[in-house]
Image 1 (tube, each protein chain N blue to C red):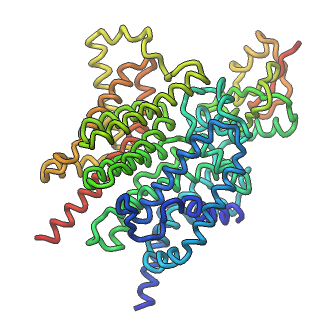
Image 2: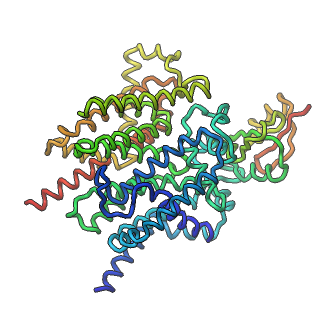
Image 3: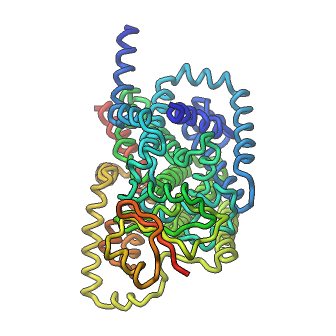
Length: 128
Length: 436
């Protein structure tokens, strides 16, 4: 009787975890740390461009918040890196997945120069 | 592994935090207020805590210190009530166990995909960042959508800041916890004739059909859903329990105050809920006067804070705008109306909980006199539906885009108010089956 109760109890538990993809999620978390998961779902140059913006922020350690323009059909990851003690930079700009057509107005008309480029993601600086 | 372990521990952190002032481990307590059982007590505790946190959010206070203080009191209460906790576990182990399991699987799903979704990132997360970085209310000014209420973002920052490993998504666990408590409180209303297995499957079904990983990505809909459920539950108590109305009134007031600070539409729900309250409930005159005074005070406080810090009470679109003259054209209005109807229907299908609610309502309406005594459901439904149509008829934005991105979420939030109908329907059916 007790064994039957435990089997019943255990089956419900497994069922519950299974339908909420608990096992898959457990596996994903165990095999990927937070940054890897953020990169997987937030994208490097695709999706939010989270990876590229993080890479730029880690590399340059700006004293400003750098505006991010995302040309993907996704929101800008700017809020992730928003620091309340820093002002918004008027000089630097990050462009995510910018095609040539998206990029040209910045380079030609607004006098920006490319500082960093990975795939179609750019860090650009306004020339003085 | 640390993240998984801490996610699991966080369930108990929430339980300890919200185990006071009302004792959550009594299976049935007469608190001189109303009969409450464990999950209802957690909900009432959450309402009290959120009101305190909301008031603290206007001051520049260290979130770690507030948390430490709250957790210390919670721990002392827990130790003091440890015997009752043991009793509770002995008697309701299965229920508690499944509660922990449901919380844990939802926490894992948030943890697996920690990235924020659209509005979470564009609207709400800036406010969260301000509070997370020890900012204060006045610093919200100038942020994108700064006029949006900040309660959800503050709670997000509060639990993120106190997550030990400082991972952002821990802040969003609270919304999942609150949601699961809501559903367990709901299924506790099921008749005693329902077996534990039946209750388990009903909880599972409701949680399953209401869970949307997208909305856990920083949206405030689950917060609104749970708060609206609490209001409808309190309204129902007010009808069923003629004694101690004053306590219920206080909780209605506190919950509606939280709704006011949750989302933009919360401003309107706050007005509608209180309108429904004054229309539908017969309360002693002195209670009504006291309620009205406190209500006016809370509303004026909201207006004062908005005007004082942001200069005006602002909404996403101005009440008067250039596109309004298009609404004078009857064809344009009809066209918009049919588009809204179409998307309304699609949105109802997106969250199937609405199918269950509508079916339950229809049954209760046709087969019983349920809505005669509980007409607040009907009145709120009429007002909120008119409101939803009014928003989209009024909007200056492209209507199809707006409908496809927001209507389903508005309806999901609202479903919290009516979800109790599903349980009353099941109780009625069950009673009927036992009789015949």
